[in-house]
Image 1 (cartoon, rainbow, N blue to C red):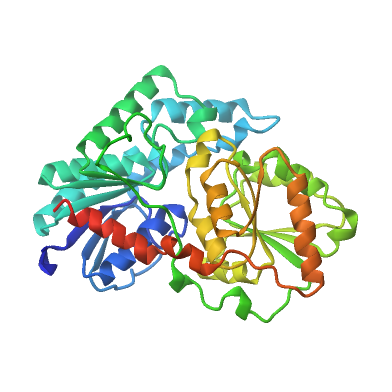
Image 2: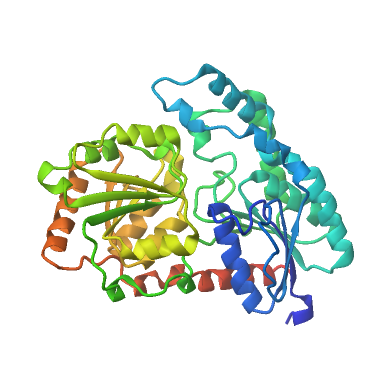
Length: 421
């Protein structure tokens, strides 16, 4: 049995706290529960601190120099491809970004991150290196560090690499595809273990491969205070809330038709709130469809704890899954937080996708296809009628979600690590 003094782990994560996006959420929850299990962890990250890092026993955060983040200037907005009138200069910038900067715009982080990682190996005896991606650059950094120290490499993927959804709509050129595939294969081959959120991330590589493990996203019960049933305040209007980033590829025809066709006699009783980073093109496309007397407010980003509170105060939670066929593979962490809030969920997505399966299994609400709107209108009418009658509409049963508790998911990750050291 491994001793406590040997439970030292180096994690490579481009994103880290205080960033509160999806890039830091999953890995920060794993770290939280691994620390409780007696691990000592070093996180190598590019995320900037907004002050002094919180002192957490057993955790060391190493932040790289700001000067290496020059790749941030290559950020692009893929929503321009979905816009009716897109700027040709912006389209060229996207093409250049996808085809000339490989595997992603964070590659400028690679030299400094690898250099610092190798120094960390000289100071501390780690038992393994764990990466989380995207961006794929994190996987490349971790691979180089693990190879230099002859350590097991465990590669976690929140999304696919070459099979990611936006390559479906914006195919790579031949050379870019070749080099991305080559880099992907090098990481998969070097990894002692590969962890994916869902099946289908690496077609042709997964079947019968003992390296592959599937650990879904989930929720942290500690993030939730009083659940919906304990909240006594009733909203003055039936509140439909959306949380998280929103890009144009998530704004489906069915959702737009749903907004446009909300019956007039329901509008004064409704309000739609959007929390998070909403792409400007996506926002404009939604606002064009808003009928008269329907309240729709874009609240901007809020701290995660505030977002969780607002989830529980809502009457209905809105989930918009990306329209690309490959988007059906991914479990959003937002989905599991929605379900754990015990508030019903209305989703637009793939009827055969991962989100649809979870919503059905937990009886959490309704998922309508990207092209349909009538089922969503009917579901909204039923929920609104119950709300007007003072009847609480319940979402997923919390006990049905137990397997998505990050404490249990972290135990699965720990078992993977221990099996290789």
